[in-house]
Length: 480
Image 1 (cartoon, one colour):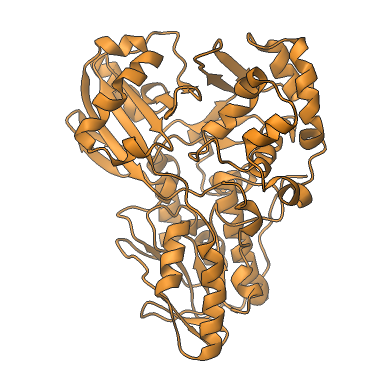
Image 2 (cartoon, rainbow, N blue to C red):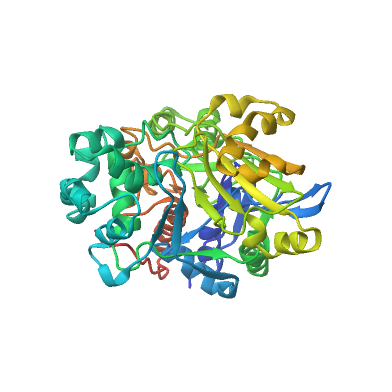
């Protein structure tokens, strides 16, 4: 294998969780790789630092993550790292409503391709009478075409799409709104193209489309530490607490990352960080300045989702035994999801078994009031809403809590899908050695969230490998 002198991957934001994918692929093939990470730990949206609370030290993740069946690239990496035993099946979704009965949505491979019909028939809120409304969206979902979905539906919102198709309020609330609710975006402004693609991908695109897995241990133990150890053994240099400030352009390539020079640069960070890096970048001559401007202007069109907060709370008593371990709450905004971590992860389970308490995570999305409240005021602000969903917590004592505040998630607003750059956009624009990776980068086939980050990382790595005449890495894609 011909080995280039040096390759680099730059991760300037604590929200970047994709750089390690490229590092693994390239380092395994003999590249010299340097990773820049602005955080104190690797992982980005999977980052799991050790945090001290008055209940002890706990590994607290960015927020609950579930690994869907269509995460083919992610699963491949998990297998290669020998971490498969840390993950176990999770085959249901529990949704609580204000207006309707609680739903438990389960996978039904035997019903494929009529998965949605199976959900409807098992629903305590819906009946065969509602099937007439479901028929109105079948053309978009069952005859889904990824190549055209953004041209047709990216200019209207998910709500407008449902209204145009004549979907009833109840059917939309029970079947379709929960998907929009957990995207961290404002459900009212999400692109119809994005959510139709998600519905196809996660509901009916495959007999096992709704299948997912969840980690038995926190992600530092189950994934990130093995990943970092593998990279270190391969000679990858990881610089923590290092925020990339800028790139330096000359002629038709990037010749510098801050003060260092590399043959290849993969910008694998969140949208805001990528925008800042390009805004601060310099060019040594007019052609390079024009090239930098093209890339910068493309990124400036991309939006960021509203700020959100993730609270991990320690209580002195458990919830009712019949409460689900994970529950979506689309009609209790801004509370969109809650999870009983002592029922999910070993570290939290040990504490709960010892104390008789519970550890619950609350996700608050798209609410600027909560996003800007001082930490000490957040619980009193959200407590009435939480107790509406979980009345038994009104008698519980809050022992301690952690609070993550983030403004780094990709926007899925109307119009964003059609303007997303591909992993090779900088190359296509004329920059020979710059590539993108992240969940904000487009893919030539259906993908979403962590899998999109992983896939774009592999696409970027494959471009480097192709140019260096080295065997590329297999990509398992989802069909249209």
